[in-house]
Amino acid sequence: MADLVRVNDDLGRVAGLLKLWLAEKRGQGASPVDVEALMKDLWALQTEMRQIMGRAVRGR
Image (cartoon, rainbow, N blue to C red; front, side, top):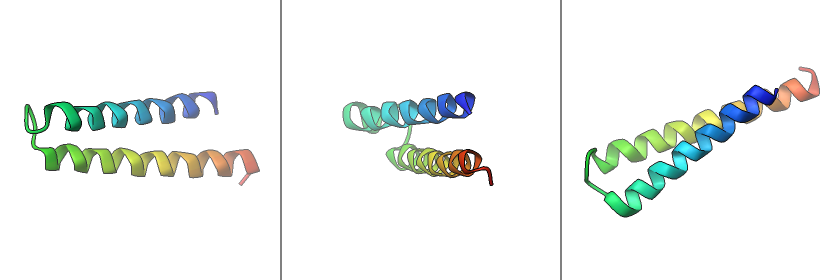
């Protein structure tokens, strides 16, 4: 479970860095649309991870 929590936290940090990139360097190095799509994918993964962790804690 601790490993899942760490991975979930890492996903959050990556999404935060991408958000910062969008705010400060929009259009440099990658398309903003691509970065926003990646952020949405990361948030979806985080949601799925939280659901899996919740099921594991409840024993399901």
